[in-house]
Image (cartoon, rainbow, N blue to C red; front, top):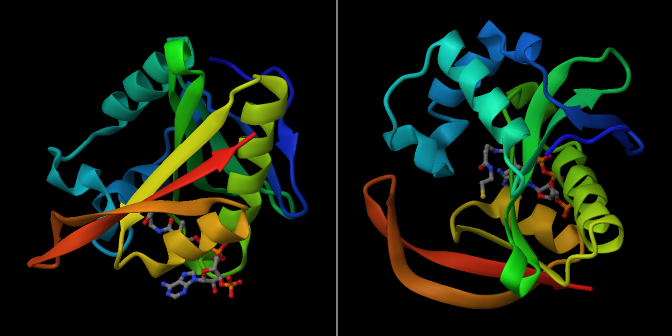
Length: 177
Ligand SMILES: CC(C)(COP(=O)(O)OP(=O)(O)OC[C@H]1O[C@@H](n2cnc3c(N)ncnc32)[C@H](O)[C@@H]1OP(=O)(O)O)[C@@H](O)C(=O)NCCC(=O)NCCS
């Protein structure tokens, strides 16, 4: 799915990624152990630039996913991505996922800002009834960003995943129109 006009937040422009956004820095986020610490991508094989290009193209071509790059308004720097999808049409709901790969940009409120804006787009413009998200209980930044963006904690799946060599629970969040 392609977004024709970027979504603007106080600090960010959220826009559809182009093949030319597949940069070395974007690639480096995926293998940075601090960035991928709570992401399933840490289990995937290492990616190369052509893999990133293919991923961007396939998500943009997909009817069920809207992936946007987060670009800092001050210098147009690509700092992360946010994805609404997969959209589950029969239930009129979607998952949301996000990653700020540029660690210098953590803790500045950007994730909460982007989650709020993309969720509003999903609920109001796409007409979705519900948006869901999940994270490991140990991912405090993700939990807090979701709560700040208006999500409610709906459930905890005990001992659901392995993180840093320990079993951790998963927290499930939801935002209902
Ligand atoms: C998790 C992540 C999205 C948070 O992004 P962020 O832009 O730093 O989050 P925000 O600045 O909007 O923070 C929201 C709140 O969490 C707090 N926070 C952020 N990171 C934190 C951390 N590591 N520990 C404790 N609190 C943290 C912020 O201070 C802020 O607190 P507030 O509610 O008092 O204002 C970002 O660290 C990231 O992308 N990490 C790697 C990928 C990832 O884990 N993605 C999510 C998978 S579910």
